[in-house]
Image (tube, rainbow, N blue to C red):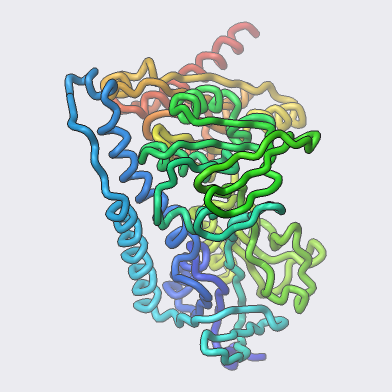
Length: 485
């Protein structure tokens, strides 16, 4: 088929952040683009994830600050009892979602992108099927296709969801009611953020984690201090190594708890509501992947570093995938970066993605962030490549700005190579950790070393000096090691 006979140069299935950035970048570079969306423009991040949850965290965070009488009294401030209106907090999140969704839609329309409402699927090489909301089904042709269908919350077997008393983050962001007692299944970033919201707004929380410790996906040293503040310090009933084997909606909700390893029954817990925060699964069913002989890994679409879909480990011509459906790093900004890189490769500009330099953040109060390698992965790399791993810690309690804010309970761990000083990773817990991590992410992207970074001057007094101190400590360690030789 000649290029002039295609309906579009590029069709993107899914209008989340990955699909949006791909469509925007492609249209800006002169491609004729269509984007297919079956639900809301903006995908999970805008409608059911990052955007509304951060609005709720911002509002509940203000409530937490104003209600912290002991903390405020240290400043000489005495506030009146805090009052809040749940519906207005929910409205704040809803308005933000509407504004951003409207902005994304107008941006694509202004660039000439065709927005198609319905369910998209593959129909063979350079063919996309579209079942419109009206029920009309048609086949479209295009030079290239990008799959960007995202992910949905994972609900483990034995858990019945009714959307009211037992729900996922998709429903929780609506903040339709505040349960007196809510159980949160899972202590990853979603569970932690909603625990932050619910406790600030006066709910009693029980956190149930199937793995051996709470916050299992976070750095162990970060977990020690973060759990002390975000879980233990808030009188959250945290239970690790415990499996919610069965959950039945109702008033009350009944949770059957079992010991994770043995599966021995422990007790039946009765609560007002349950938030299931046990991770996410890819939206790849219904894409008709068999038409292209694509085999998924637990539902994830395999791709290479250029975002090309792989069939039997070989790139499939003109077919690309980005975002959560690929399972690489299930973050909105990862999806956006992948979308742009996919289009760059479509345009003939050979581009790769550097996952190691992509940061992640949990927007609790205080925040948690990380970038690069975990310590176990860094140790494995050190053993494999034959270098010594360096590790230093920098503490917020030595930072003037953190002390001025009376928020000095924080830590940064920096990982680096002792042979050449290259920064390998960083993990931070503390005030504005989500902002601080970007500096380290940039250093990792540029493959910079701690000796050069230690010479950079940071503004005083700012929290960024926590990073500066870590760089200097690492640089000093390298110099001492060199002197000994």
